[in-house]
Length: 263
Image 1 (tube, rainbow, N blue to C red):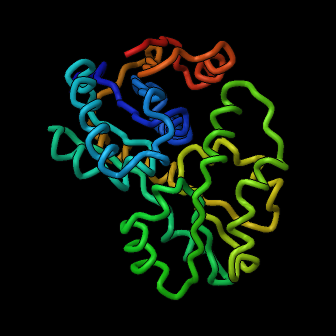
Image 2 (cartoon, rainbow, N blue to C red; image 1 turned 90 degrees about the horizontal axis):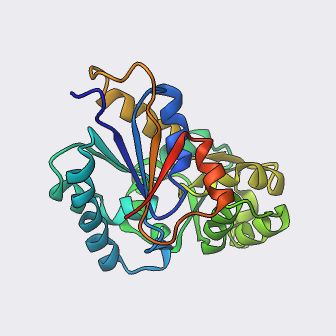
Image 3 (spheres, rainbow, N blue to C red; image 1 turned 60 degrees about the horizontal axis):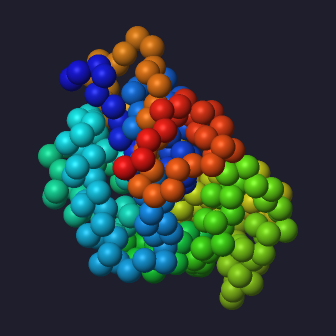
């Protein structure tokens, strides 16, 4: 493996940074290409057929261009809909992002857990299967919140995001039947860990869990015998739509993404 071969992260926006962060903690010198499909944002409002076609169509030329060692679809919506399509189209490992329902069920004492994601993710049969396999003795309450996705994007773009707004966006999940008994919430959108502080302030008695650390461990395992650079090169952030604002560029720099490009 060429030490310069990058890890390619793909998301509809900046949510995948919540997966990139724990990955860099494990693989600090890994070359990174981060792709934000902001021209297609938000994925949660798009049809399944559109996402299933769009994701592999974007990834194929990106793989040809950057020759990554693996691809990370750091987006729950894209993973639950298009992961198999991407794996069929690409001749390299593709790591997906799935809701952390199994560890949530293991943690819950009330046996009522929440799954907070996009509207597209929470309605997927894949989530039905995870709940049936790993949380059969739990009540699983789902809520799709496009507002939280927008708030996470706004926060990374330097805008002020209030706890009140975050609480209002997630509150319908707790207002559902048995919602008051929820003791663990699965953050089933990679955008939502970016609002971790606000969510914990809004719902202090609820544990939050996301798949980022587990995905990072999977990436490290799949690349365990591969060579890496001695020092990390500047990370590349590629946008399919409008260029990032100055505040967002500053946020990206915190993840060592300093080479900003447009597709």
